[in-house]
Each structure stands twice: as structure tokens, then as C-alpha cells.
Length: 290
Image (cartoon, rainbow, N blue to C red):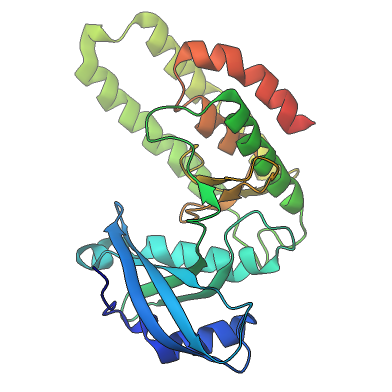
């Protein structure tokens, strides 16, 4: 059963103006908008909208994705959407290579805490490799790593980083992060008691001791890029066409300027079991550097 979305951003007149401004709609106009599917993620609502037009606009999209905040979480988590809106308005709009979904409109309002994105609908052309927590195949992981490498390379040492795109963390913020982590680890190890091995405790202590050295790269602002932040393998669309290499990364609410290795470590170390990591990590890192 089809329905009409009650959201203002799904109004036909609003969509007409947004699509014209983005350059994909000419003299025609959106006549009808049909809500084909709607579902909630943890923090956002996703609507798939089917569009019909008056006028001959063959390049206009037949459907789009409207992403908005889950209403009951707007007051607490609206900043998540604001971050993604900022990504598409500054990063996505400045890219020539198609590595993220095309965005037709990205809007946020600090007063009302409302935000929305009008995004390219990739339902027919792309898919997510697996359902969490099942990892993708090696071939799929290669596609994902190539896409991340291309994105990182596109923004590597870009002069706009930390100036007009993103912001550098102040040294005091970095110090506070280490202090917070130290307190959290103390509470964690105290709760675990003898269930946490001495070897594991020693590993945590070494991490904290080496924090200044690990942060030195970031503090130098050298060899940096834009990272997705939440860069697991379920946040990327793979092409259904086997001859295409157009893997597109989505969900940019955690993006920041940082070291590229953060995305790779998050993808591999955080979500893969040890045996798979031993088999996949080195050849995939070789693909990334290549």
C-alpha cells in the first residue's frame, strides 16, 4: 500500500525547488510524491519517495531518499544529523568523483532541531554486502577498501582541512580525551576483577603510556584526510553490476579530519574475528596502499 509522507521536505513544491537548485530538474515540476517505504534506524528515519513529473525531464530522479531525525530523539541527537548535513554541504558538494551518494538538499535548523537530507536512491543499483554481524567476502572487502582509499586520497593533505572543511581538535581536547579514557579504563578493570588477565591490563597501560606518541601525528596536522568515523562494512553500498567499481560510502554523521588509518582499524580490528583478520588484513592493506 502506498501513502503520502507527512514531512514538509516531501512536499511536491519543496522537492521541485530542491531538485531544480541541485541541477537535476529543468522546467518541469514534481507532480506527485508517493511514499514507497519508511523505516527507522537507531537515530534517523528513512523514506523512499517515488516521484512523478509534469514536463519532459528525463534526467530527473524517479525516486529519492529522504533522511530525517526520528522525532522522539530530535532533542538529544539532532547534532548527529547536523553533522551529516555539514558533510554533504561542504565535503560531498566539493567532490568530483562519485564516492558518496549524491545529495540534492541538506538542511538543518538549530532553533527547531529539524534536519533532513534528500539523497540519491541507490536501491536498484547497489546493495549492502551482508547483514550485521556477518562479514563480507574477500572480494567485497577489496571493493570497500578501494573505495576508502580513493576517498582518503581525494582529501589527503587538502589545504581546506581544518580551515573551511572540518576543524582541528585543540591540544587540550586531546589531553582531556586521554584523561577520560584513563578514568573509564580504571572503572572497567575494577568491575572485571580477575576476569581481566594481567596481560590485557598491561596492554591497556601501554596504550595510555604511548598516547602522546600516538597523538603526535594528529598534532602535526600532516598527512591527514577526512575519515568516515563509523566506517564498518555495512555503511557502504556495493554495485550490483559486477563490472562496476562504484562503491559508495554512506552515513557520514561521525566524519572528521583525522588519520586515514582510523577508518581501516575501525573496519578490521573492531568488527572481524581473529581468524578472518589474520587472513584478510595484510592483503587488503596492500590493496589499499596500491
